[in-house]
Image (cartoon, rainbow, N blue to C red; front, top):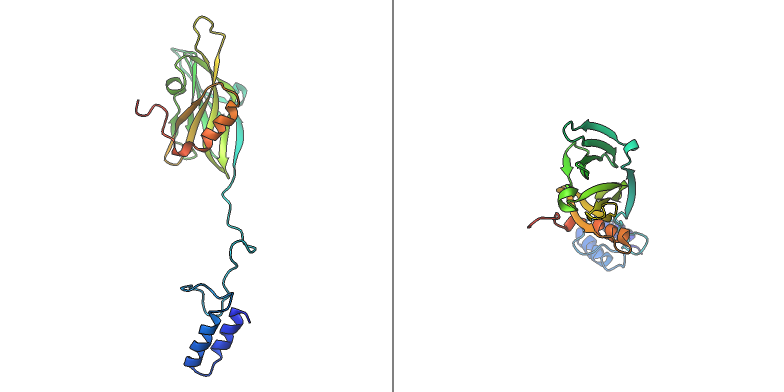
Length: 212
């Protein structure tokens, strides 16, 4: 007999005392709810996990790429004195990027869906040398929510050979409480994978340069 059928039989007993006795017997059945359950009498308990019901898995982290190429971005303003520009480039999930090009150095701001702007200040936390950006940005998403941003920053750090550049990957966390650069990945083997690992763990990382 199942727990539900047993409880139905208990409810048909001629007296309250007999109902109580019968209900106690039902609680010893294999499919009876655990002690303290709030299930109403006669309701079978839900199947245990591992017997047809799986725990909801956390969404996997994936990459989405957006363009930083000039042809895909819109120039918002040009600075008359320096000739520098600020351009708005597409993002993902309601975010956008502002690309700053000034004094032969480049950086990015993240614009969130609520219109707030978060400067990443590459020229302060990645390199102070002349720099340029890679052609695209990599967003790390958990489900549909961005959790981090990866952008390549090419730095001319050798004054004697300015054509030779060092290629860094700038990793920034994108969280409801803060958006900032957390890691600078040097040009090492498997740098892209290292940047992704850093991005996926960035939420708990401090902003680069804090405490200095």
